[in-house]
Length: 120
Image 1 (cartoon, rainbow, N blue to C red):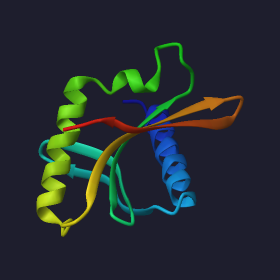
Image 2 (spheres, rainbow, N blue to C red):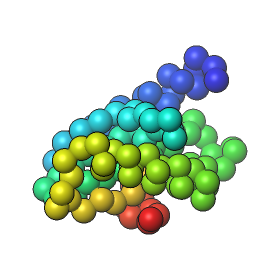
Image 3 (cartoon, rainbow, N blue to C red):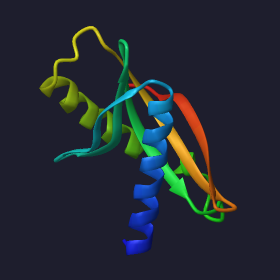
């Protein structure tokens, strides 16, 4: 992956994290990794625990960001989330899987937050 694509992805994750924080979510983890894969953001507000996949696009020439969250990617995220839940004290929390799409339009980020984008 090129340095430019990595930088764009990091920028998108920063935008998504700031967006969640403005909505009073506390970011618990960024780029949580296990052998099974990675979850971009894990955030909490009250009893709600979000597992967030962030997709950043500089254009829609190659499709929408949410289209890249395939069934295989969803299964991978669920497996990683399960490992997070087992290794952290999450009793009483309600997990949810969201996707945040960040698109760079005219130099400004446009975010689309897809809540409860997929389930277990």
